[in-house]
Structures are given as C-alpha cells and as structure tokens.
Figure 1: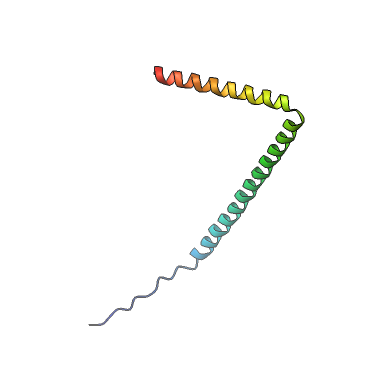
Figure 2: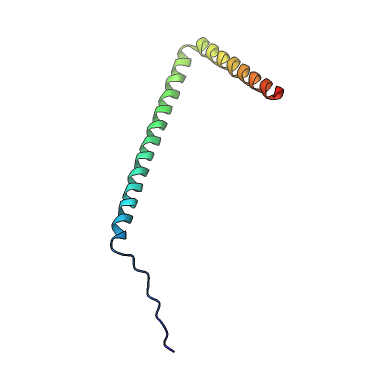
Length: 87
C-alpha cells in the first residue's frame, strides 16, 4: 500500500494581492482612527485648560454654572425616576 504525502496548502497567486489590499486598508484605517482619537484627546485637553482658566478668572460665575448644572441634572434624574416608578 502506497502512502500519500500530504502537500502543504498553497494559496493561489490571485489571493495574495487581495490579502495585501485588506492588510493595507486595515493599516490605513487604524492610523486614521488613531489620529482622530488623538485629535479628540487634544481638543478635550484644550477645553479643560480653557475652562479652568475661566473659572480661575471668574470664580463666582464658575460656582453659579456648577450649581445650575447640578440643579438641572438633579431635576432630570428626579423626573426620570418618578416616571419609572409609576410605569
């Protein structure tokens, strides 16, 4: 009885360029997403720095804005919880 040799799987030559295209597209997409995330991070840092500078220059206004935001969030949460308990 003759033993059959297992031949390694060779991909057709037409598949390799397709794999290269997918790999390149994934690499480009990853770089773009990374750049967008970096831009968002930088923008957020700028907003935080500007906000802190504003509050240091106008402390009473900063307290007023924080208090107003707290009252609004608290009111919205109260309304949402009341609706949930009545449903």
